Image (cartoon, rainbow, N blue to C red; front, side, top):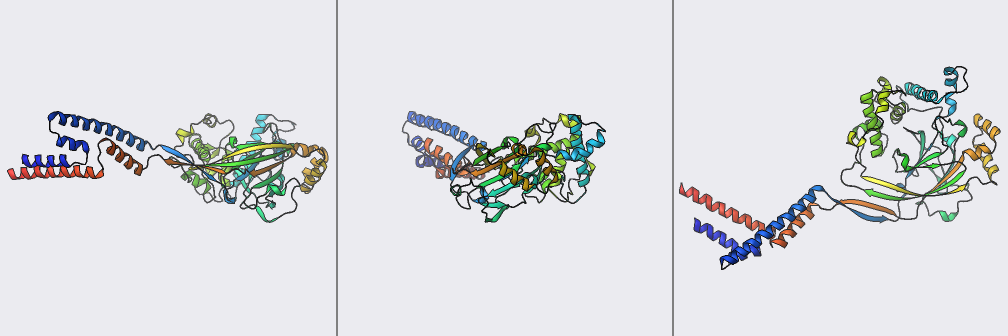
Length: 480
């Protein structure tokens, strides 16, 4: 038995694909055999160290970034534009409340004003909560109050821009170049739009002329006078104020945006969470981490404080007609003085909302801006007449026009022109540094470098072990 095993081992040593093992089998002296055995052991140790580091890197999933360029984006790739008045509610809505709740006082303080806002939103929510229609603030600004003119690529816009209830800014309107543009060109374009600015239907050239309604502003609710503009992906609800641009009155603002798309493959999310699906149901809303954090934080407050913010309740109610999963009629609204709600403002969303992963596709818009006075001193009269004509059926606005004359234009009118940059779109794609193919290739390279053995060599080693075990099992069975 010993002789047969020795013959097997010697045969494998002499015919091994590894040069080191063959050298051990063919050595003529003990010194040479020890030298080659030590060399083979050292090489095997180094090989094992490098293979171990390769496996650890594969387990840690390192990534690399690939840069590509897209020259001609399609119309569906362009962003949507959402605009919100910094003053979310008309001051007129509080007139009756002030008469009834402040007796004969002519002025109110900030705390009382905040209570009026709270009571107003609360009243609307109670009215709407059991209805089958979307929550709607009837006394708030409407699109016709906001938008004086809208042009896109030589065409007029439809007056049916998507209305959304923003949890911070109230009623906002979103323009989508795929749904809100009339099919025919118009000749009523502003004279400062030259034909050289257009490069066909695939171009993006939007002009919005907006009105602020500063007489309706209250110092307690907002000290700034501006529109907030968001440039964002289609079907996305913009939340972060850092991603917005403020537009002041008496100013023509030109914004030129370029896109950078970042695509991730690990630790990211594309679909809405279950909680978000309950809220939006069939409404087309794109997943964003910011929106997920916002709703997750409010769910935490609802569970611990047993109340919900009125504006967020309106936000929930707005996005579906019949809400069978979240009925707010049994949930109280958080009051202004709610200590529990105030203490939960600074939550650690990353620890609290583990399901809110970053988006797998993030589109970053880089914006360049330039400005001009609007209107200039010689065009005030024309702009005044055109805006007055726009509000000819609004009795309250006609009163303002008669009272303030041209100062009303100077303090309220603004124009924003939004165009796509001629620069190409950068696409950054994340991919794994080590795939399973790379892992096998790296291990094969290390074994070939250090001990000169391939996959076939490992099969031959397995064959040797099989033959030895077979000889031993035969020997022990024969001795019984």
